[in-house]
Amino acid sequence: MVIKSGVEIRLVNQGGRKQIVVFDMPMIGYGMGPGIEKKEALAQLLRDLGVGKKDLEESFIKASGRGGQRVNKRSSAVYIRHIKTGLSVKYGKHRSQDLNRFMALRLLAEKIQAHVKGTPSPKETLISKRRKQKQRNRARSRKKYQNQE
Image 1 (cartoon, rainbow, N blue to C red):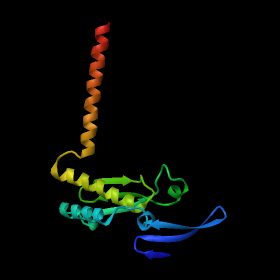
Image 2: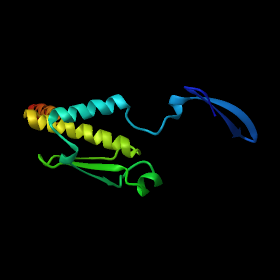
Image 3: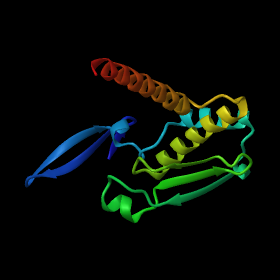
Image 4: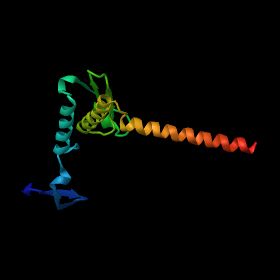
């Protein structure tokens, strides 16, 4: 029963006793997923990049990992492919299909943006940075152990 906007009161049976519990509406929510502002910002970014719904090939696949029976039975993971560039993203980290779809679109937008600008994506930049660090560490290690012999 909703008394006023923002508050809901329920009669809950806890351990044989009935109690009245007051919930704030944001706690209850309407499922997991990004807010309207974030969805609109992503839609604007895709429009700016010239990506329409017709340019995307989207399919929902079964996820793996944590989540148990819910993940094993439902197709909550998302595979999105941009037809013009051939770039694709698979995302299935969360249990919510809506949230996975949003995150996949966000990653795809980053990839397309990097492809259009000709600059590496933030993920590729991080990978190359770590690769250079490992090369430096290997060189230091070789130098250190060559001096000991």
